[in-house]
Every structure is written in C-alpha cells, then in structure tokens.
Image (cartoon, rainbow, N blue to C red):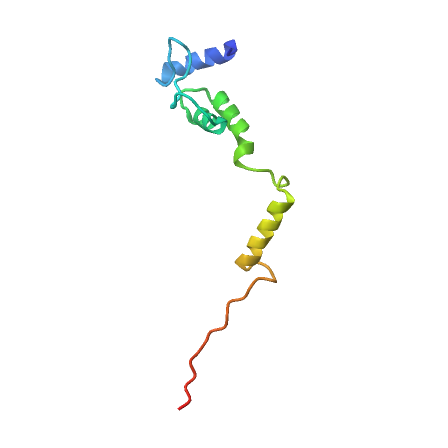
Length: 107
C-alpha cells in the first residue's frame, strides 16, 4: 500500500529511531486502534520515527480540524462572537458597571 519512496524513508528513519519496526517496515503507533481520525493524525504528526515529510503532510491534513479559516464562520458564530464582545465591554452598547452605593446617615 505504501509507495517505494515512503518505504525507503521509513527504513532510513528506522535506522536512527527505535519507533520503526525494521522487520515489517511499519511504524509502531502509540495506540493499537483509532476510532477518531483526528487522534490518528495527531499521533502521526508527533511520532518521531516517521520522516519529516510524512509528519508535515499529517499536520497539513489536520490543520482544517484545528483552525478554521477567517471567512469560514457562519452567521450564527458571528452573532455569538459579537454578543461576547458586547458582554466583555468592547462595544458602545456594553453594559456598564452599576454605580457604587454609599450609606448616607442622617443623624
């Protein structure tokens, strides 16, 4: 399934790192099976036994799941963010702090 270039890169990486099984030419992953592709890509990206090109490719594939593009937020997300800004006080319609109450004694 892997191309000869990837197999060669795995063998070259296996000479320097024990995380790659030299007999099978397959890296040993930290977990046996993955139910979530995001977790798999994170482990591939962080596995030191793999070549940097494979790790960088996994990082590129994982990027849309971690960080959305600037223009990809929908109307509801923009409205929620605007409401958060108003609550934080960064808007002209933000709620002001209540006035300080003082006790006035009349003797």
